[in-house]
Image (tube, rainbow, N blue to C red; front, side, top):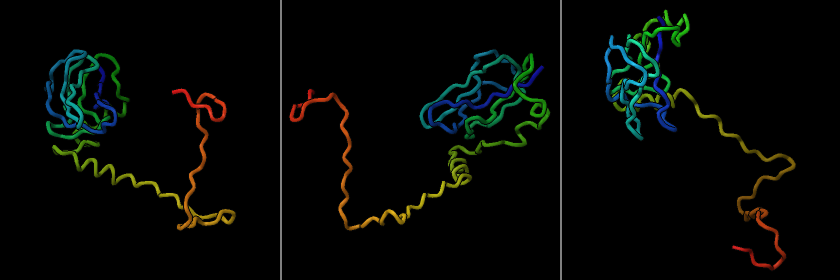
Length: 162
């Protein structure tokens, strides 16, 4: 018997988190492959999460209303075979002790702010004039660089085909 952890999948392009709307299963229940486990809501849609494997539910992670980051563990199954956990992960305490990136609460604003605060923005590059290049004159007019126009070659003065 092995342990299989199901993580919140990437449910949409650019979606980083989703709110758990409803559990459709409970602990101790046996599920089959493709049984719907939960419904999650993003800012774009409500999506059902199916089971990728057959097994018995041993742990349900977040509570209804919690906002969960993509890639966070949401459910654990006991399955026939090896499972997808390493030996260290299988002996580790249940995810209840360490909620990970899940954010308790219905709005999820705290999670977005916390992840934004964790990564400082990269410093802006400083633009300094080099000795060979004079500093730009703020009063001088700016000339647009001539750019070649792509298209079929034609003789000078000939009208383009449209």
